[in-house]
Length: 199
Image 1 (cartoon, rainbow, N blue to C red):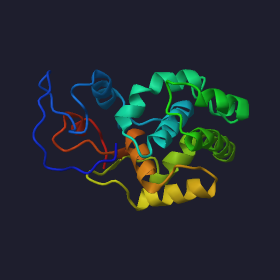
Image 2 (cartoon, helix red, strand yellow):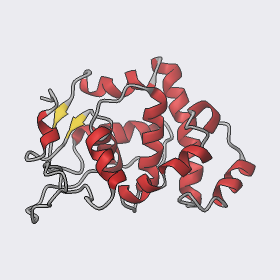
Image 3 (cartoon, rainbow, N blue to C red):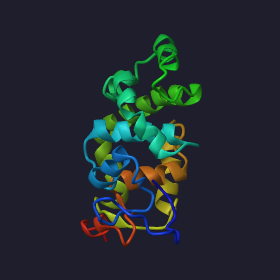
């Protein structure tokens, strides 16, 4: 959710707590995502793969739109096992294109398979995707707010593209780093900003 901090009217949350202004208080799914998932450090490869593919599908859309379809994506992509997704052929892609629960963009669906193959290659090279991803920050959580890209996301984006991944521009990668917890980007007046040891 790489959005710059802006001066917006204070949102009123039914429970009286203070959250990032990008979370939609009218969507309980989105509020739970903000409270329980966004920015929590991820180290599980399958969850990192799921998040990466969902971020790819977000390109040009809102994260809320993708989040609302996440369960349909989990079913269609068989739990986001990167090894399985890497084997998908044209028949499987055609069935995904006919699934009304998904974002049925042909290029993004094909990119999910391409990216699964690159993801698996990174796992073989590094031992895990987790080890590859977190080496970019030396295992540290960095504190950044108000940005949509950075030299870090530029570098990771360039490396992922070099490895053959698609839909991994610097803005998408920055959003991925925020969601996966490498960047702690909760707004400063959000209660969750103070629950991290980010530097």
